[in-house]
Image (tube, rainbow, N blue to C red; front, side):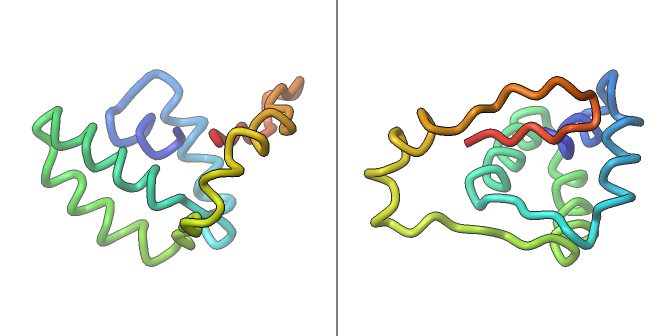
Length: 95
């Protein structure tokens, strides 16, 4: 996750920051990913960072939600999606 790499000051944060800076108006995040970021930050006692993240980033991205009816098809959809990318610049999306 690009956001967590930055928020947790991990090794590839600069690459992630560059990507996000270039694409900030065209990004989507699932509600599940948003909740997961919160759980990870809270677990690491980073409540303030989560608050800053939600104030700064959330207004600039689209939050997507999977309709209840679609969950039963999720496993089939996942098996039909290839997540392998050969280029470093390709975005890998967790499904």
